[in-house]
Structure formats: structure tokens, C-alpha cells
Length: 176
Image 1 (cartoon, rainbow, N blue to C red):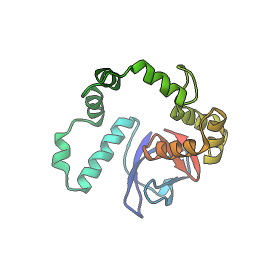
Image 2 (image 1 turned 120 degrees about the vertical axis):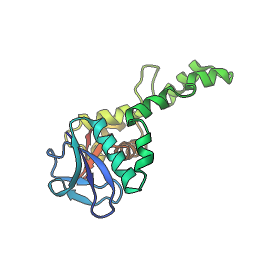
Image 3 (image 1 turned 90 degrees about the horizontal axis):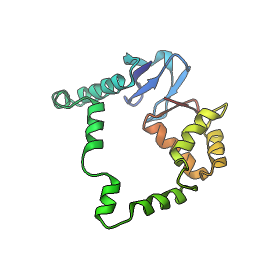
Image 4 (image 1 turned 135 degrees about the horizontal axis):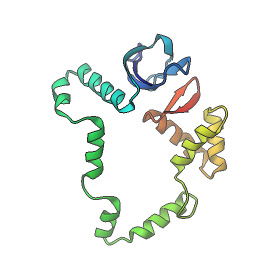
């Protein structure tokens, strides 16, 4: 279950994955900790895309942009259109006279492995799932064991929480 919830301190709205499983949640904008039972739920759904769409509609209404929002496609359609628009990285590199395979190999080396290595982001996501207590310290330590520098792991963890791919509540992270 996903719920669109709002902060009574800064009026931010965010998605909360299964609000029944945790006692508290932190506002991604101002950092205030809220009891999940007391959070105002603007929308609830089993479907993450439906909850994302509802949040987008609520934000548009808040900014008096409901008419413009109504003209847009669903969020998932917009993401697909972005993926299909333009040329991909490989085509761009090759059109510029750059060997795309050499770039892929260099990227793999820069991330600390061969061509079959996982990205730093994937390692941090896996670390959140793997540790018993998913605090920043534990996740960073686990990711560091897998070759991700501690500072980079902390930044990736913060970025994933900001993007809504992870939930942070009471200093603990959870995958959404």
C-alpha cells in the first residue's frame, strides 16, 4: 500500500510505502519526524504509479495548475516518452566518433570492477536490504565492503531517499 501524506510543518507531500509497517516517518523536505498514524493521508492505493499520479495532481492543484496538469499524460506515459525521445547514449557517442564499448569498459573500471560488475547504486540498494538494522552507518559499512567508497555510499543513500526509492524514518532506511 502507498499513501500520499503531507507535513504539517512545511506542507511537503510525499509517498509513504505501507504506512502501517512503521510508527514514524520523516519529512523529506524539513526533516520533521511524524507519527504515521497521525499523518494526513490525501490518497491511498496499492498501486505505486496511481499514488504518484495522485501526488502530482495534488501538487498541481496546490499551485493552481490543475488545467495544465489535466492536459498531461499519466506519469508512467511521460516517463516512457522521455525514454523514447532523442537518441540514446550509445548512438550519441558513436555519432561523435567515440568508441561506445571503450566508454562502457572505462565506466566499469571506474566503478571498481569488470564488465559484469554492479553499479554503486545497486550495491547501496542491496545493502539496505541485506543489513539487519538499515541505519546510514550500517548501510554505508556494508556498501564499503562491496567496494563503494563510504562518502559515495552516503550520498547515494541520501539521493535514493530524496527520489522516493527508499524511505527514511527514525534514522532507518527501507526500500519502497
